Length: 175
Image (cartoon, rainbow, N blue to C red; front, side, top):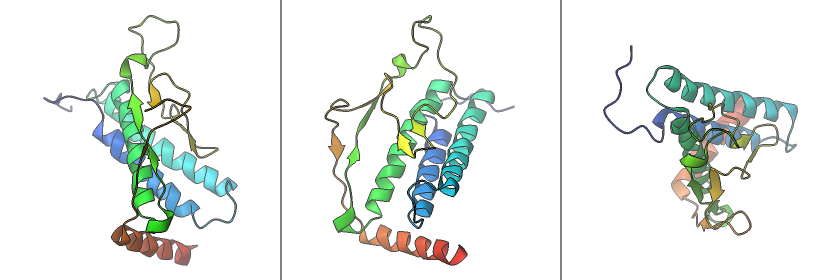
């Protein structure tokens, strides 16, 4: 039996880390593919995101997190992963990352009892088939709104780019 933690639970650290790693591995592997959405890429993204969700859901099953904790962790993890990938690019290629606002009180079934929340599945904020984040949720809104999202400026890091290139070279060799 896992002891109930004596600290706050939002966001789930396990969910955050698992989703960040899933985003980074997916980006690393798909950079070396010739087509944008090959079957292999889609399968890999689905496997990685399902594994990340499973890790998060297991924390709820163990009784140490609520589904909303996993949702907040997913949102934070995807953002951290996206930021890391942007930082790992050469300085000239780094892209800005959208800043997100998580509204946990909106994480519920529309029109239902306000105390009834979703059960976290892992499919709420990311469409693995298309490889895109979903921004049409009331609980996950880009800061600045959907029409004009605020972006965090990202500067490429030479050290992270070197590391990214080393990992890329290993992936190319293993193909």
